[in-house]
Image (cartoon, rainbow, N blue to C red; front, side, top):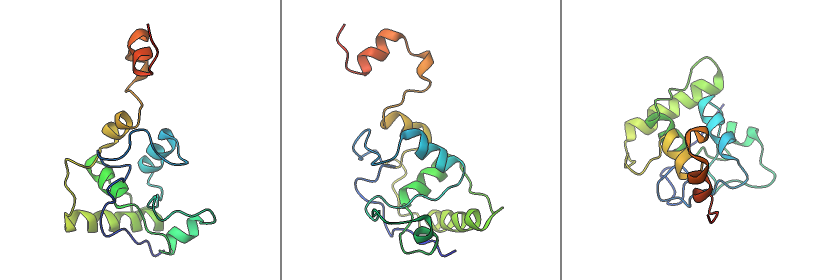
Length: 139
């Protein structure tokens, strides 16, 4: 495994407060959060291509998203070294933390990510009328 990572966070990285709200490309909010929480790989959105595979990420052909790693760290997610993939992610996490290039205020934690991209936490606790207003329905 030869994971590589972006040298800096893109200005529209979905893991930053400056990203377009609700835009996650082909991914759902739940998919992205689940991938991060289970320690999966997530490539930079600018480098994705139609015919890419997980192998492209594992070989370093397609770089990992720096915002994804910084967001995990801010959220208290520590990637596990129980697998080759987990160890590689852990190494990237240590690197990003040591370089300290990111403005922590600009990085979204998992909770902030969910809110920024449109999912209230938890939806069941929101009054029906308030939920309808958030979704743009008129009373």
